[in-house]
Length: 140
Image 1: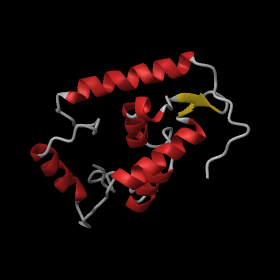
Image 2: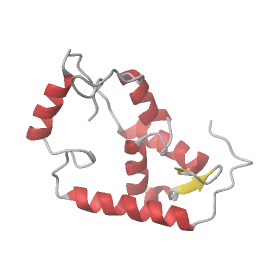
Image 3: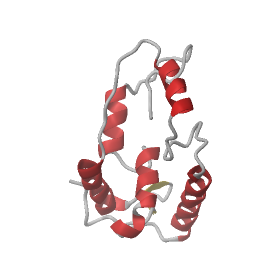
Image 4: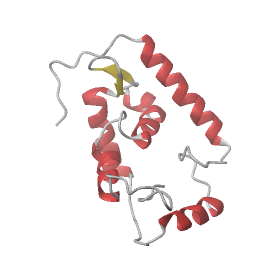
C-alpha cells in the first residue's frame, strides 16, 4: 500500500502516485522496496538473487533479473487507486482492518519478522558476492 502525499503536513513529494507505480512496475530493486521484497521472495523461482551492480553500492537483480521481475509484475500484479484529499486517513483505516504481509512500515502481520530476516539475509549475501558484471547485457 502506498499513498501520496504520505502524511498531513509533510511537504509534497516530487514523486506522485503515477511515478511511484512506474518505479514499482518498471524500476529496479534499488529504487523500489516492493520490487526488492518480491524479487527476494521469488529468487529461487527466478534464479536471480539480489546482487551488487555498477560501482557496488547499488543492489538489483541484474538487468536480466529485473526483466524477469517486469514480466512477473505484468502477469501477477494489479493496481487500483482512489483520489482523496487526505489519503493518510484512509491508509490508517485500511492498515487497521487489513493485514498486508508485504508492507514493511506499520505491519503487524506475523510474516513481517520472516520477511525482514529474508531481506537482511539477501542483502548480506549480495554484499559477499562479487559485483555483477553487466557489460554485455542491458535492460530492454
